[in-house]
Length: 526
Image (cartoon, rainbow, N blue to C red; front, side):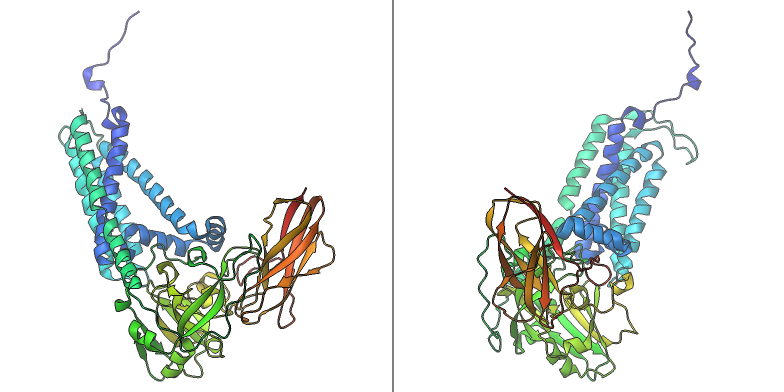
C-alpha cells in the first residue's frame, strides 16, 4: 500500500480560525466591547440617548408592530426594556463574534462590519425626535476605537504580504501569547472606559437635584382624608407605594433631568406664550389630590393601575394664563426625550384636577415616574394624558397632529373604561372550605364606582362591601365574604359606575382603546 503525498505547493494551509476558533471569537467580542465602551463614554458627554444601544433600542420600539409591543408589556411588564437591551446585547455579541471569525480570514470584512454597525447606530441616533447632528459622534467614536482594536489584534497575526480582497488569505499562524495579551488589554480598557460611569453620573446628578427639593404645602388641604383600607390580606392598598407603582413608557434610558435645567414651554394656539421654570412652578398655588392612573395596555384583571397622592399646579390655570384659542381642541405635550401625547383641551379645562405634578405620595417624583414634572389628568388612559418628564405643551387641533401612539393605531381619545379586579384569592389558588374573603379593587376615574358584585359558578350576583369613597377619581376596594364549599369554583366580578352603567361583559383586548370584560378566576376549595 502506498501513500501519495501532495506537492507542497498544493497543500492548503490552515487559517487561524481553523486552528484557533476561540481566539477568533475573542477578537470579535473584545473589539465590539471596546467600540461600545467608547461609544457609551462619548454619549455620556454628548447625550445619553445618543448611545448606539439606546438609539437602536428606541428605533426598535418605534418600528415594532403593535402585537409585539403588547406581547412585551404583557409578558415582561416593567422589565420589557431590560429584556430588549439584553436582546440587543446578545445580538451585538453574536455579530461581533462572527466578524471576529471573518476578520482573521479576510481583515477587510472586519473593518467593513464595524463601519456598517456604526452607521446603523449613527442613523438611529440622528433620527430621534430630539436629535442633533452631533448625536452621530458616539457611534463614530466607537467605530474608530473598534477598528483600532482590530488592527492591534491583526498585528499579532503572522501573515505573508497582503493580498487583494478577492484573493484567499494564507496566514501562517498566531502568536497566541501576544494575542491573549492584546485581548486582555482591550477587555480591561472596555471595562475601564465604559462610559457607564458617565451615563450614571447624569443619574446621580438628577438624584441629587431631587434630594434637594423641598416640597411646598398645597394651597388647600385635600377635600377629604384618605379612606381606611379594608383589612384583607392580599388586597391592594388604597395608596400604591412609589416602588410598586406600575411603569409603562418608551424610555429605554430613564431621563435624568435636574430641576435647575427644567423648563416648560406653552405655545401654539394661545394668546401669549409662556415659559415656566421649576422654581416658578413650585411658587404657584398647588393642589394635592388622590388620583388613580391606568395604562391602556392593562388587560382585564391586569397590574397596570395604581393610586397615588399627587401634588402639583392646576394645568387649567396655566392654560388660562396663556389664553387658549377656542378652536384649539388638542393639547400636545412632549417629553424631554421627544415622546408626544395628545389630550383633549376640553377635558383639561372642565374642572377636574388635571395638574403638572411635582410630587407623588409625599415625595418629589421618582425619576422613573417623571421627575421633575409630569402631567396627571384624571379619567383618561395614560397614553393620552400622563406625560412624564414634560417640557413642552402646544395647543393645536386633533386634525393637525397625531401623537406617538395615535400614529400607531391607538384611539385618538380614550376615556378610561369601568373595570374591576379580583386581588385575593389568586387564580388557581387552593383555599379551605368556610368563609373565604374575596376582595379586589374597581375603578371608573372621574365617574366613580357605585357598586361591585361577585358571582360564583354563574349563580346570582352577590353585592360587595365597598371601602369609603375618597373621590370619583380614585379606585375603591371591595370585599365579599364567600361561604366556600369543597370543589372547583369559578369567580367573576363586575362593577357599576355612578352613572348607572354596568361594566361591559364582552371581552376585548387593550388595543385600540382599552380592554373590557369581567375578571374571571378559578379556585379549588378543600
